[in-house]
Length: 134
Image (tube, rainbow, N blue to C red):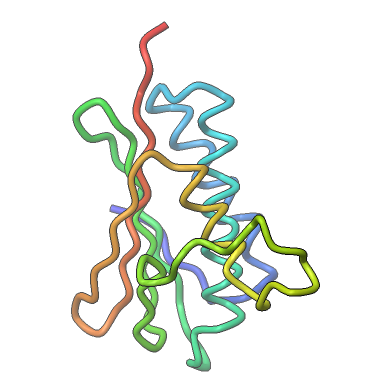
């Protein structure tokens, strides 16, 4: 199952609220849920800004896997695999660093696993956060 929205900045808040409610219902801690929400927000905003497709949609599916929560984000934008990009050189002055790449870096730090696929002309990014026992 899942839910689909128009790729619009007006829908970012609704998408994040949808993810947050579902991951908390599946037993993710508040702190881990907030990290996952931040990662989802970054991915969604990037899809909206850079997909290269007018009238794009974003489909989000939240599922409970074995010891982890999965959030799949799919869109019909131009192919883009964020995992192909190297981490930015954080030890270099911001003035000497190329623009971009920090969002992908942030997403990688906020989740435990990340996977990209191109399926049926869609980008599908799966973010995972492990469920920790209390």
